[in-house]
Length: 228
Image 1 (cartoon, rainbow, N blue to C red):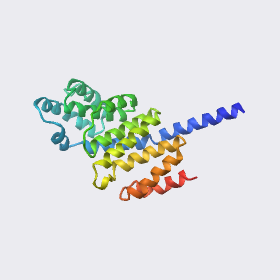
Image 2: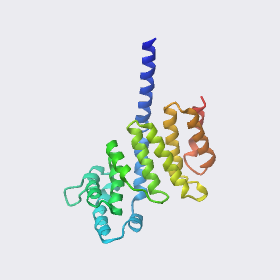
Image 3: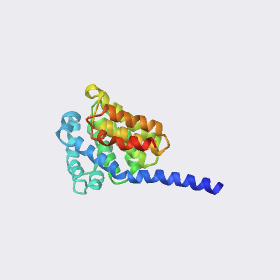
Image 4: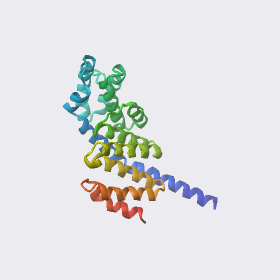
């Protein structure tokens, strides 16, 4: 009897581990999507201003190129050719908006390199703003990092927070990109942790509220699975 119980526990743990492995590609894709969101002149207009900020923004520019080309190691640690790396910029320009942005970049680089604890550390230290996309996406990325560290409660907490942040800045309180994506990820984690009722509630919310979202187009299969 004890052996059967131990086997069931082991099977359950393996199932949960498989969930994280299976969804790692989706996590990486979500993080790369954030790269596209935060790239470009928008950053300079909204985050950079004072002289020290200008200096820091110049330091960020090369890293953004590495970042966009998915050379995450050089973006994070530097290229030994004059670019110090987002990690050093975040430290050297601590207290500036550009330094804060470097923390976000460093966190996303770490996530794409599979350095999940580093990703959590950087993303936790990133100071969010009252914006519709970047800050919610950053919090969602933090949730993904916690999921990879097999801390589902913190992952779910941050994913739900990200969705709420995104909705709060959207017309009719309905953001059809970040919010449903984060809600879906949160519900999948709930389902993997035997919280089917909570997961089903979120799946149904996605179906009814985020009609224009690509996520809603595939939500029926998750609803069906959660009702089994």
